[in-house]
Amino acid sequence: MPNFSLTGLLRWHWRIGLVVVVGILLWGISAISHPLMTRLQPKPAVFSPPSISVDLKHALPLQDVLIKHDFAKLTAVSFAVIDGKNYYRVQPFDNVVARYFSVLDGGELAEGDQRYAETLARHYTKRGNISAAKFLTEFDDDYHPVNRLLPVWRIDFDGDAERAPVRAYVDTEQSRLATLVDDTRHSLTSLFRFAHNWSFLQGYPRVQLWLMSTMLVALFGLGCVGIYLFFRLRKNSVQRLRGNTMRKLHRWLGLSVGLTILTFSASGFFHLLMSYQREQNELKVERHVFELNQLGRDGWLPLQQTPLARLALVEGGAWLAKPAMKDDKAGPVAQVAHLSGNHHETVKPAAPPHDANILISALNGQPLSGGVFALARDQAVAYARLTQDKAAQEVIGTEWVTRFEGEYGFLFKRLPVVKVSFSGPGNPRYYIEPTTGILSARVDDLDALEGRLFALLHKWTFFDTNKNLRDVLQVLFVLGIVTVSVMGLSLYLKRRKP
Image (tube, rainbow, N blue to C red; front, side):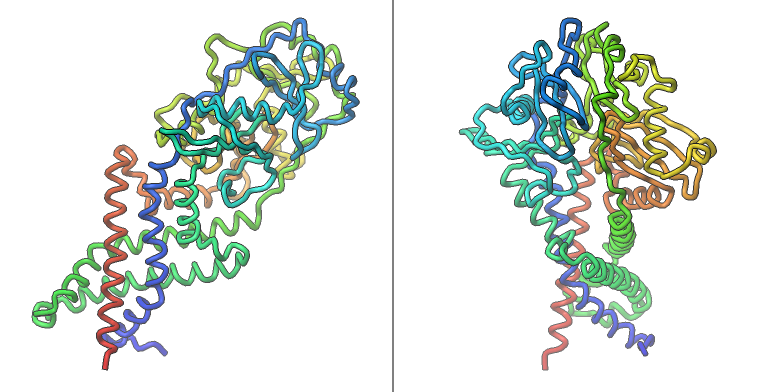
């Protein structure tokens, strides 16, 4: 049985400190590296995706192109512009290299997906010397799961006198930059994942969860006991600590960082449990497969009426198109701008209002009732596995989300998306990317609460108006936690000497 007398508490305070000191050092070092990582990461030269305007008036209809090249099924369609020429980008199956066909005559472009990936990478980086290109369908040590987007192309650029070599990861289907990585960022990210996320245990997720949870609970207990002992022993502290400078510093520094120890450990513990639960319950996303007989000439005719910036074949056998506009900069602008360290609220939204889109039957060209919102609603209902009758009762709203903010943060990567809100237990919200049909995020009230607490207590987002001040203060407090822990260990070892 633990001894909860004053002497017993002191003894347990020392013991808890011995348990958590390794965790404090790992988390402290990695926390200090995080501001460096965000500031030293390579920045894109351009924030907007390339502007596309494709006039299909004299184009070979896509269904003719597919018949010409013996397609029976496909999963995705989009536009690409390579060397000033327009192409259909056709994805035969999920996670395979797309094929590219001329809009004018249907001729195939050899290695089209790699060439478009290189075009996009040059656009976002303004670099020229490519040394390698690789198609990725899985995450690896350089392109981590936090980036979420797959498949992507990795395009390697050589360095020059002014810039280090860099790897650009691009999603050719949506013409977006997933991330930029150089050797500095790779090293800092590896350090952060090793020391903060304990990636050395990622092959043993339950062990990782148990050890990290134990360490965080112990750290919270250490903070509580330390704060209690400070006030419990304050009456005779002057006389008791006279001539012992290190113990005085340990006492006052411990009080200064005590509240931070509690908020960091509590929010980290909550975040750890919720992250593990989300990983265990993650919904498997499978792309819809379209049959060639879902495409008709009547469905193609409305697409020839105006130049288009985007084209996608979406669930239900429908064309989702966006007319080209002068100086069009629509796309995942917020995502790319975030890579440069800009706050998401300072950049323009990622897409125009929903009424700029065209949603028509790919078979007969008739407009589909409800537009994009109805499409996203049906997609969300399918992910929620609800019947249409049940969905009619529980779907309470749909809205466009065109920037990262609130419960839909940069963590989720995809923009623009449609938020579909349900009235079921926990008020779940499904964030759907209409052009791909992919579920970007599922958030309920508990998820949102955890996200807010983590943002406030762990990331200190209440200081976002002055991010430099926030980072400086966080580094100082983390250094204080590390210092008080090392001092405590030193004092303990001195006491143990014979």
